[in-house]
Image (cartoon, rainbow, N blue to C red):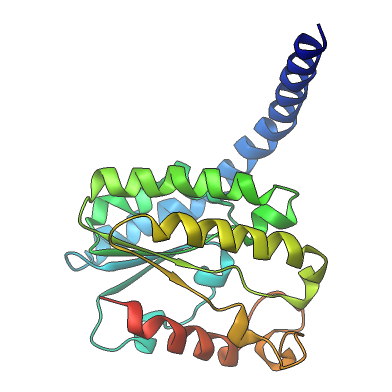
Length: 223
């Protein structure tokens, strides 16, 4: 009887969570639609080169200005959008990742998920779904995950961020043609606090100095 009660409560909690999330999810998809359409229009005007390295994820990718210039000689395509969460990247993957038949996909996602209250386990579950979708469409593509960064404005979430990073790292270690890039550690001072010069006034998004660190961390892993 006790087991039945626990299962019933779990079901109720799950249904309530879905009812709360679904309207917000639908609204976020609608908000992002303009950005996705802009990518598709850009492709018609200037068709991307074959087998690029696709960068995707949230605003830390979207705001990476002149991204290809950081990696000369590489075919880079920036498909980061808005303040997206991982499940939103999953939703749009068939329009912003898989059509390009990429040789590598570089993902920065999970940051906004944690800030929105999702657990590290949920971040991992959504990332696995994204991983599976990319791998099904491009079996030989390398999938690279950039760890969640230590934004000063989200210091209250550091424990969850570190847990999410560890879970994704452990998962990728079991898969072929993958890489995990730690940007959390090199963005910290010796005492463990984030380097202030790496972040804009909002203490969330990065300055050029922050992207310079990401560049050095990523270079050894790009195809």
